[in-house]
Image (cartoon, rainbow, N blue to C red; front, side, top):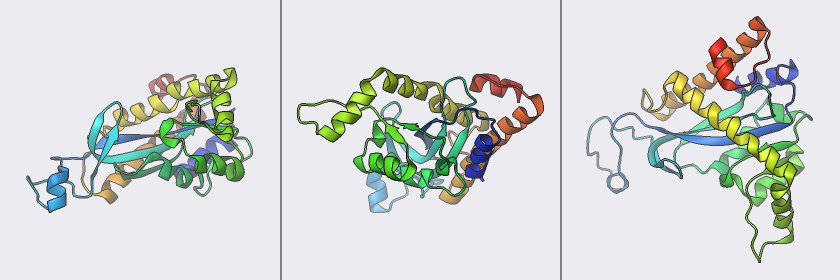
Length: 239
């Protein structure tokens, strides 16, 4: 349903320019006490109420978090409505690059349309297989920060040159004004961090429903107010 709603935004021209998309993930704290790795390995429960489905994940900004992870893609073109396109939930220990293909191969998603040109992502998605998949299967360019070294291969140098170009920098700059604030708004609006429930299936349902409800809020606002909002904050203020 989330993929279908994302498709609807594009095909109904509510998103005028879907050429640039973004992907990212966010860690969400589990409800209750944390389950330390040492106790987990021994099968010991140091306190009641531990979510035994949750796992440990690391974020450069938040450190180690015991819980789950929301993986998301969204629109990211300048001055356009920023809306979720696809989403999924995993435990916190699942690497971002492992979820890239499932997110972009969802049925009824916009990634089957010819409008897309670029996907922007953080270094967690810097994976040669994902570059090839993006180009050959999706027909788009995956743009990630790529470092230049003396031993850098010719293939990766092409990625470095594009990322360092004026166009590459302009495209990647959309990440901080699209998917990053979008994720924080969804978490804040629906109060899903920390989570209100335990268990993978329940957590997954709550988080994905929050994303779907966000899409419906934006869609309803566009259909009834007939406006062309320029930011997520403005959109929320009029829903």
